[in-house]
Amino acid sequence: MPTILGPTLTTDRLILRPPVYADFEAWVAFAADPEVNRFLGGVQDRAAAWRGMATITGAWPLMGFSMFSVIERTSGRWVGRLGPWQPEGWPSTEIGWGLAREAWGKGYALEGSSAAIDWAFAELGWKEVIHCIDPQNVPSQNLAKRLGSTLRGPIQLPPPMDTWPIEVWGQTKEQWGIHRRNSVLTTGE
Ligand SMILES: CC(C)(COP(=O)(O)OP(=O)(O)OC[C@H]1O[C@@H](n2cnc3c(N)ncnc32)[C@H](O)[C@@H]1OP(=O)(O)O)[C@@H](O)C(=O)NCCC(=O)NCCS
Image (cartoon, rainbow, N blue to C red; front, side):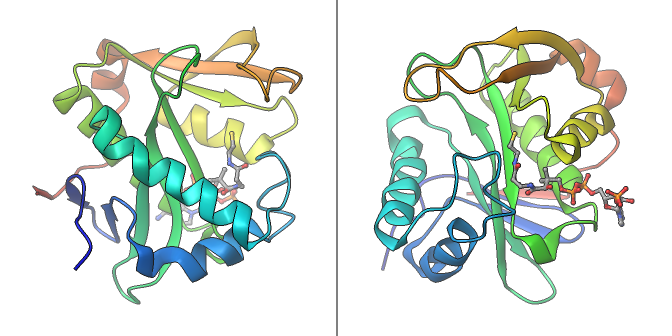
């Protein structure tokens, strides 16, 4: 049996848990969708999707946090990945997000990201959350705004993303205390 490397968060409609190998085929489909990957560095083939999934999964035991797989509770389907992200050279403590196209427009990203932010502030001792967003990525900017984050300005990510046009959005833990709307119902190991 594969080991689950971190907590499981449960919200009204979603389960967030570290990735497991059973997520791989859905991850491959996600990585192959041009619309989903327009601002994530472009589409990836199966081998690149494996490396991407292994990087996110491997960060869990390395760092004690990483992005969660997002599971739709009603269907049991994998619908994306989101959560804490801070690879080497990253500007600060990010909550990032990316959902499969069929999961857009339902408030799932808001619901899942809110739970991930709650968890990061409660369990990781973070002082702020940021979101690194392409200036043309309006859906992502709208989500940042719905969470209560504000635009801080342009930023350079570490290579190989150093040529990407990126703006950083964010808010402090204190600001999140005012902005938060969605609740994490249960948290388990
Ligand atoms: C960025 C991304 C996660 C946003 O997803 P999203 O579904 O638009 O975001 P939300 O969860 O906030 O959902 C908001 C939408 O759901 C609708 N909605 C429906 N039911 C809802 C509910 N119960 N609660 C909240 N919103 C709801 C809202 O009206 C809104 O629709 P609108 O965009 O037509 O106004 C998604 O576009 C994505 O995965 N993009 C590709 C990957 C990517 O670019 N990632 C970011 C890199 S920085």
